[in-house]
Length: 159
Image (cartoon, rainbow, N blue to C red; front, side):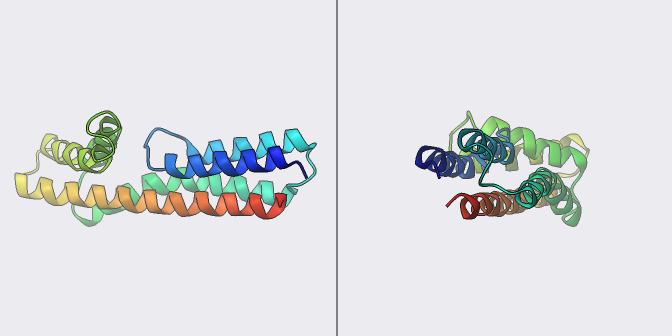
């Protein structure tokens, strides 16, 4: 047990949990990378192969859940691919425009613009934008839970 390595993982994992809500930050990969750094520091003695496999599966799932949830939300509310892309681009812009409020407001604006670009009426665009944003928020919630689980798996192994 190496207290520095253990607490380094915990601190970076906590930061990665918050980073889950920033669209371009690969928080799942940060968690796995920090677990790998932890193991380098302690000589690969604490995290077992099954946990590494679980972390790999969860990392892939966290990458997919975002895209799948956004598409399902848009589809359920009659949105288009352009609306999903608009929500994603709006989320990226929201990092710089009115943070942190922009992270939640700009995806709606981006999705709405994307729906208008797709040729939807204003009412249909708003409905599709709402679906895309709900899907993206559902994806973020799913990613957060997956990242939480990833950290718990590692913490159980190292403490």
